[in-house]
Amino acid sequence: MTLRGALGLSALLCAGLAQAQTPEALDWLRRIHDATHKLSYSGTFVYQSGGRSETSRITRRVDASGDIEKVEVMDGVPRERLKSRHAGQRWREENSEAAPASLVGWGLSSELPGFRKVAELKRRLGEGGQVGQVVYSDGLAAVSVFIEPLAGRRDPVRSGLASVGAIHIYTREVAKHMVTVVGEAPAASVQRIANAVEFRP
Image (cartoon, rainbow, N blue to C red; front, side, top):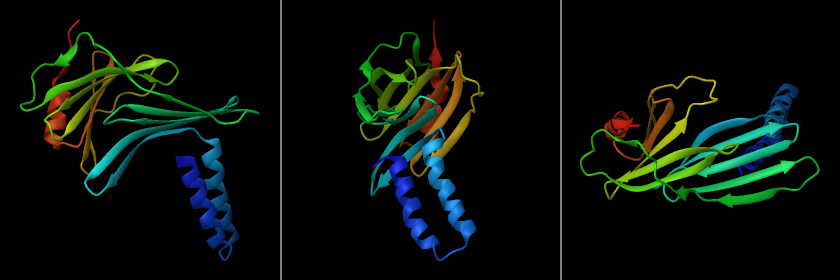
């Protein structure tokens, strides 16, 4: 089920309960439902079940030509699911996988004991842009390093650590790129890897 579908279903269920409520409450629920069809958004979704978790980036863009919804799996095997709907057309679904690549010049100034590089690839980002991804693992935990060019980005990079459950995310700017490290590893390890990322021309 898509994020929009889940939000729509939630709004529909709540709408039935709201019939016994005030007109203001019903109007509020209608606005929530309408927003799922009219607004663009982007965010990170972390799914946890027992000891298993999966991190995805969810992006939805709406403009005059239609809407595009994309879900990218950020850890494990890279996967992307794209749904686009244009005026007068049905949903079209595409699947694409990231391609192995060599991220020339990028590396760590010092290795984190126990972690080794297990994958290096590039994935498409938005309108043809690309982001590099390097995956490090100690055999138990995997940490992904995403390297995204800042060209065309309006907002400044917000450096620092964020946590969602056992998932830690550290972002910083390196050589006009946004480096984001994501992993179900100790926060100190995620931050240490992020601070070690460097570009050597």
